[in-house]
Amino acid sequence: MGKIEVWGTLGAAYGFAFGNLGRFLRLSGAWLAGSIGFNVLFVLHLPLAVRLLGALGMALFLLGGLIAFPLAWHRLILLGEERGIFAALRFGRRQCRFLTYMILTSLIVGLSAYLALIVAGSIAAAVRPRLGTAAIIIPAVAILAMWCLASRVTLALPAIAVDEAGAVLRHAWRRGRGNGTRLVLGWVLCSLPFIVASDVLHALQVRLGERTVLGGAVVGALPFVVEFLEAAVTVGFLSRAYQQLAAAAPDEAPSAD
Image 1: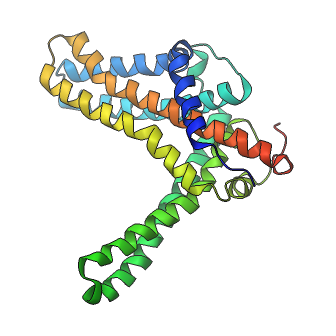
Image 2: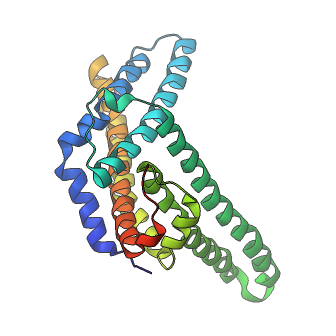
């Protein structure tokens, strides 16, 4: 079974995202422009009901973007598929299938970590009189171990993006054997810089305030730019990892439709 080359894959993910900013803007630009439009509603201090409806609309709109954009970015990396700025807004059957597997993989990883917390927490409570506060290490290690194990199923997402047929989750589980820690490490190193950047932007927003309507709307949309960039890098890592592992075990990679 193949192993993910973590550092090379990380470099390729960051390099592709920041080396193809034109493609990034073409696939995410319409979603980001929409977020600026929604932010205008908040800057204008409209009635509460209007702002609440705007908040709901923006949440649904950006949810669509954070499903459609990763799918399009997977397909750009894995298939070389180019899409126009308005075509990137399309949300059809392929996007719905991708959303279904996003939910499934999130549930598998989340429930596995929760189960580890329950079981290990009970063990830690039983041994705490002897170990003291050191007993907290038990659930922490258990959660991390289960997270590394369950993260293998995330390889189903690039497979779904390229329309892989068959038992996608089972193939993802087999491909990811021995790579759980690498997948978690990759996800952390893809996300951490953007989490820091989001905190810096939030502090900047508080400091600058809303000097003009458009300026306030643009500044309010900057965190979404960071979020889409994070998605591009994380998807890039997962796509490259999928390529490496599928090439290492071609017999487990059903042909795309």
